[in-house]
Image 1: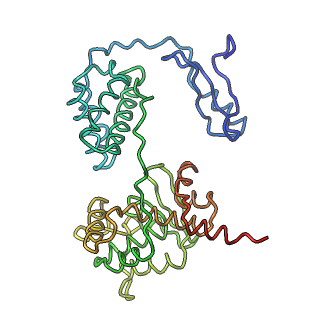
Image 2: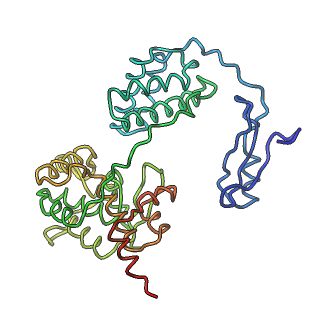
Image 3: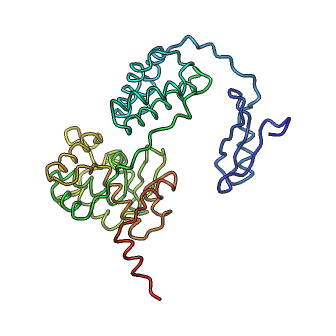
Length: 350
């Protein structure tokens, strides 16, 4: 960075403007995406960006220990994350205290996390340890936001390399699974998941106000990306929605915009189903019929995305349908089978 210039704009990946500035805490050059390729908008971002040449804030919280911030952290998480995620955060926090101890929050560094990793991997699978690492990083990011620590010292900690465990269900297995589900509501949830390549939380969150028959779209909110994805209502989806709303083909029930498509039958349409009971019910079916134990509810989404790619749809189209934030995630679904190779070679003719 040139002398006398505290921040500047420069084009980065795919033409997006990035703001470069000196971080007042680390005293290192840092970049921040402006989120736009238009120079005028990037300049507006620059003007609204807070000054970075302020004197460093003095932190005198070196006496605050991990257990001192537990209540504040979990009061925050209780209102911002799902119940399952909240329980995961608590487990991670308690295991960290058990292994590393009640350290000062300003002293926790990457070396502590590496020690935690090595101990935890003796107790649980690497994929579980990776969840712990992500949870801890998020917790310390919150402590920075709460202005309890100047910056997180654990951001560079790497997760364990693990093989993908997602399983694409073959057509015979899929037919067997669907035909073996006794619960009509569970069967419809499975079908809509396959037809929209969605996550279980997205399917269970659909309300009647999200069904836009005039435009022919389902508005599906993605909690993971905090954005909506818009799925066209195909004939298969339209038929399924009709079966869900009006299974007996008689008088339609009186529906409200905030009613859920899939709901708690004991409480009413205004109460949505939670994902854990649905996942468990699906897993029971898998075990009862004796198909591959690797199959879980998320395998339905994986199967749908894999099938979209196998049918020749462009990666960008599949990315939009899946609602992936990054196209590299979509590329992870690209697999090559022996049959694919045989078909490719057979296509050659000279």
